[in-house]
Image (tube, rainbow, N blue to C red; front, side, top):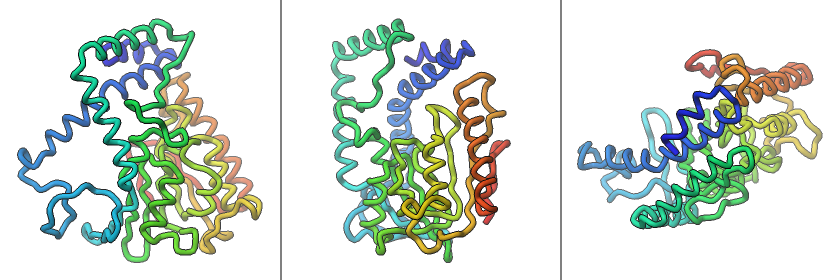
Length: 309
């Protein structure tokens, strides 16, 4: 897969480029994870790992657990809201399946043959990438994604919700376990919209229960993300009919802002990413005109962007 990806990426054919990106991500993700775990080992760094700052307790996995206390990083307070033991157990099962497979030469050879067959058949069939090493998805979201590390970050009176690539039900469960959904909803200053605003990770219920002054979309157009339907759902939670409106009083008829990580002009000409962002730009401009001045937005044209509040 790693050898085939560069050839596909170099074709400038949008469909082939997308396939090349998909293959490249799969080919390098698990080996890279193994490398990172080795390079970040306490033996190499002489730095304790899996230990919360300011404690001398034995190292533990970063996860939500009963009695988990928040910890400070500088002036910011971090509260872990996920993953829980349940998501990590699923992740471990899939990881162990992978480790067992690489010790079995016959299975690896079969995998290579299957990949070659898929590449040869491209155009007639597609890759089925939804299952992860024998572990089924959770409502269309892969196990590594629902096992994302998630934080509520607080500084002074401001709050930032970092959702990783998790799924809406998993995020709401974590928020409830950590005590942030006491009234069934929460409002934050900044929400990093989960999994690049994929339609599998955001739904109307989530948008009603979690609202923000600033919504950050990190997708670059790959796989159709950020999804137009998700952007519309978030907008409807602020400006739509009462049945779709956010539950938090702080969100009622208040200004809000959409932040996007890139633009269509920054994407490869004729690519699916460019097409996606052109549609996003058109939709957001239309929503802004209909919002009566409550919605503003920013598209990042540079390597970085400064979020101002």
